[in-house]
Image (tube, rainbow, N blue to C red; front, side, top):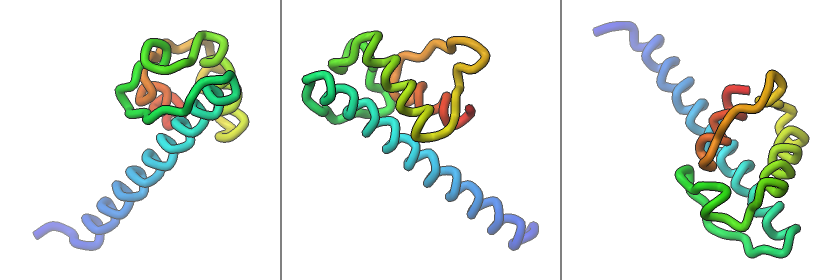
Length: 99
């Protein structure tokens, strides 16, 4: 039957990771919309597969502002060792989850 306490602990850890990932997705989404609105655009519904440059009002400078704001909000800099390519909101979230 296995080890029920160990299985329960793994389940709890998985749930905590999922919650943290969802919270990070919300922070990144809110930050993207914050920059869009600050630059005269309209906030939009974002999903993990949203292409940040072709499906939002962000341009490359706006995207750089998002990265700066995310570093301030999260204390993480996934680009400290150099630029890492990303295209979608989900890819950006993953960088901050790993960074």
